[in-house]
Length: 191
Image (tube, rainbow, N blue to C red; front, top):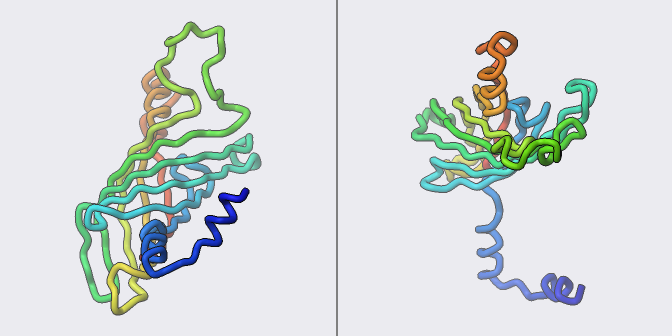
């Protein structure tokens, strides 16, 4: 407790403020669907000349929609090879990415039950890999800095490893058109 109090009582000079500002995330996101819950919110960082993003999202699917209450934590990576600037608008014609989602629900096992031999399934039941492709458009509110204060709309067409596995094991039940998901969202870039 003393260490925590002393941390907050340290005098802030301009170098402390600069360091803290560099640690602040670059964007915040609100997403509908995408196998990360009915709604998910998150934040993240841009790097490599703002062509790559790495973020963390928390999702929620209510029982009334999914049959059980489900929570998710997702690590999401996005690559955007280029953007087109048109006045105050920035169009990103291609976003590709992947995510790793950990699911929290009483319907999803955290690990395989003991009646399965060790190594019978090579994956963790609650983890799911996803891949997606999409596009986005941003409007810039800050006329002086083209990177600050951008509000964007995006969509993603995705597929998950678990659905591919289900389709592979049960092609008569899970059809190929059931593998894909469509999601929409908002992203606000504040720096």
